[in-house]
Image (cartoon, rainbow over all chains, first blue to last red; front, side, top):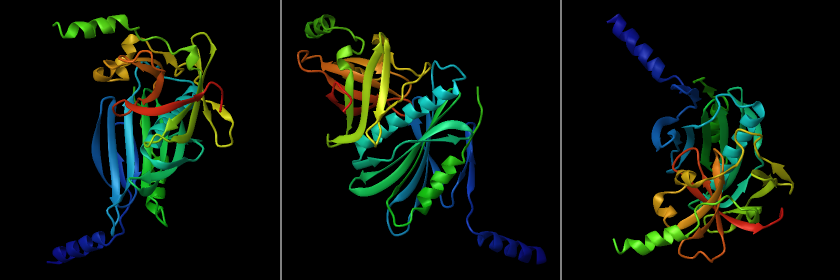
Length: 181
Length: 144
C-alpha cells in the first residue's frame, strides 16, 4: 500500500518535472534535442540519410525544424588539410544556400561565418525569406568529418521571439560527431 | 527501330560532353524561383589550363576566393560523370559541360534539338538528397 503510494508520488513528481533536452544518439553523432522537439522523420537519401526533428506551435500549424543530413564523400582521402576541410565546408554551404535561394522569395543571406562544430572546421549561413508567402528564417551549417559531410539546418517562421530556433541552433552548435573510418 | 534511327543519329552527330569552356568564364547570379536574380553571385575563372577558380561575392562588394587547394578543387567533368548530375531523361535533351566538386556541379548546356541557341547555365547541388538543379544566369564576363 505504502509502496503504491510512493510510486504514485514518484510518478506524479516525475510527470511534473519540466521537460528537458533529450539526447539523440546514432553511429554518426550525438545531439541534445531541445525541449519539445520530436522525431526523427527519416528522409531517404541516395548518399546517406536525413533526419528531421521538429517542434509544433500551439495556435498555428507551423513547426520549428531541426534537420541533420549525413552523406558519404566518395573518393576522398580520409584526412584533408585543415584549410581544405574549411573550404569544402564553405563549398557545401555555398551550394546549399544557393539551393535555398532558388526556393524562397525575398531571400536575404547574412555573410557566411566560420566556426567549429565538434572541434572541426565548419561554415554557417543564415537567411531569411518567404516560404509559400510566410516570412521564415533559418541557419544552415556544413561540416566535413572524415569521409562524411554533415549538413545541418534550423528553420522557423519569423516570430517576435525565436527561442525555439535559437535552441535548435545551440543544439546544432553543440553536436558531437563520432569518428568513423 | 526505324523511329529511333534519327534520334540515334542525332546523338552521334552532336558533340560529346566537353570541358567547361574558357568562354564560360564570368559572373553568375543564382536565380530565385520566380527567375529574378538573388544576391548570391559566383565568378568562375581559369587561372591556368585545367585549373578553375571559384569566387563568391561578399556583401561589401568584394570577392572571396572559395576554391579549394587540392582535394576539393573544381574538376572538369567527363562523359561518365554526367549521370551523377543529371537523370537520363535530362541527358537525352541537353548537352552539358560541367565543372564539379563534392558540393556542386557548375554547368553550361545546350538543348540537343536547338544546338545553335546560346548556351544556358545551371548549378546542380550534390552531396545530400537527389542532385537538384539551381537556376543561374550569366551576368557577364567580368566580376560584377
